[in-house]
Length: 183
Image (tube, rainbow, N blue to C red; front, side, top):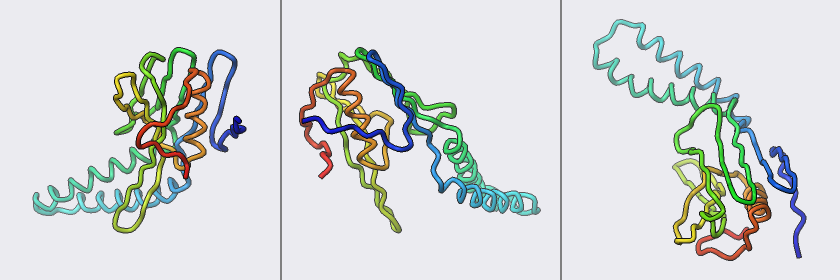
């Protein structure tokens, strides 16, 4: 019995009988807070460097400058980037644009490169919080696991993409060791 596949709220889907394109923007509401934080962070650094001080104080602050630049880069990605996943009978492509971002690689795989597509639940814990995400991976015919740069905040979004890939590439779903099954 096939379950009805509900399109996640933030996804745009264009599909016909030959191919399917799923796209979503990276924007998250915390981007507004990050703008406020980046203005304060980088404003403090401008003040720090405008004061006449010994070179070793400025050298120490250079680490903070790198963090400030990375923060601005991340904010720009949140506002402007979009991930586009194109699925056809013979090819799966994942494209992140317009701003490159560390750890997010564009990918293009042929049907011959894909034995299965599956979902891994990733839990990242730090001192104050725990973040859960669901990443999509491809198992190759040589039993090599390839992580696609598709990380979803919820299981429903991940399973939507997985099922679209299976549908258009005609992949019969089979269990993969370590796969998250939504329990």
